[in-house]
Length: 115
Image (cartoon, helix red, strand yellow):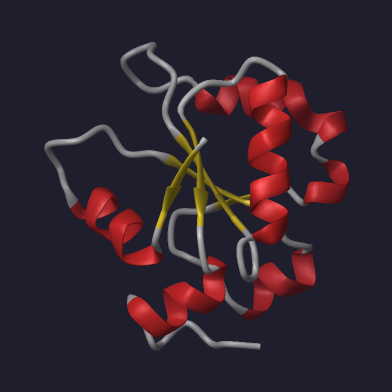
């Protein structure tokens, strides 16, 4: 599993020469409502197993190739657990965003609230 900082993820998303990753937010809905990254998709960790098929479908890029998945949580611990789980289920190109949404607020976009 690869680990990227919030700034590295932001640079990747902004780079039109690279295929965009799927930004997978694994926090709970109330957390997602408080603070989120534009374009991210919510799949709470607590419901991921029952929605794995939906995630497989979402991972397919417009070109038919699987997108990289960047897992995001509050600080990076839950997202690392989800990334490990996804890799064990055969997903490749799985990345953990270290620092989570809190790090994003501090390093990338101060308009995203911290909590």
